[in-house]
Length: 318
Image 1 (cartoon, rainbow, N blue to C red):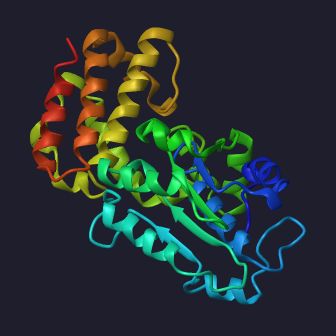
Image 2: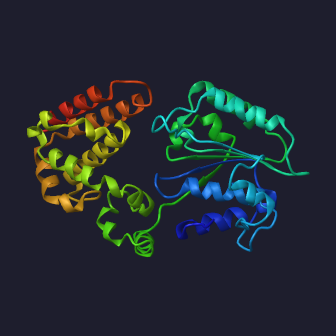
Image 3: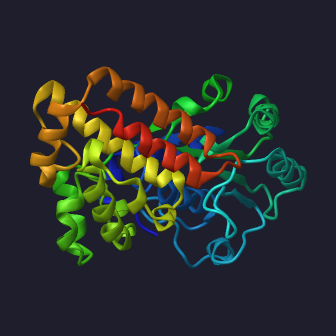
């Protein structure tokens, strides 16, 4: 297990006080910068009995061998399942934690570690259930949460955890990562992914789909709804909305500042759209995208919702 170069300051700051580690943390920051992997490594370090000089798990002790399959003192809640891209964290998941914490540690005087990835997926019931653990967590227990949407977590959860902000890599750090991993050909995609080299590499296979959608969005009010295919939703409605949000933000940014951010290679198209767009309608559209994105977490007709979003997109332009 390793820590990405842009995470070293976080790691050193956190592990300098390793012997007095807090019981509950929330690690937050932009998507695609390796927060979940950072916390996964951290959870293994908390259990390892023979840490390296950098406080990384040794990979050889009995505890490290267990983590390669299933460690009896580690429970992980991950809202990604094989049946669906994402799901809410249900109250039953938290009840599973309660049962886990009721058992004694497998190791004498050992720690128990709870990891909850993408904690913005909590619903009201699971939030209330988690609060009971956070108010009085059992001794020698560490609860680690990750999120790329801190504001979506209940304030009562945030106030009971130590917040650790995870920064995204600089452009130079991202470029070095792409070069070292043999993905330097993706460097032009970095602005779209907010300089996140991990997300850029992970979504390599989506490049053609992104180009297809952008080629239609360039048409503005002349976009043809007939040409829209259900395959555009292959990565999920929330993925498409992320793309629409960035595209809309780009138009707003150019309209106000004459600058480009996410799509520098489409500067001419953005310039024309910004000229034709109504600023008030652009901001309303941003609000609509955010609302539909929240609704996409529940069972809805995603094809219909997407069609309606594109219909609203057409109305932005004069």
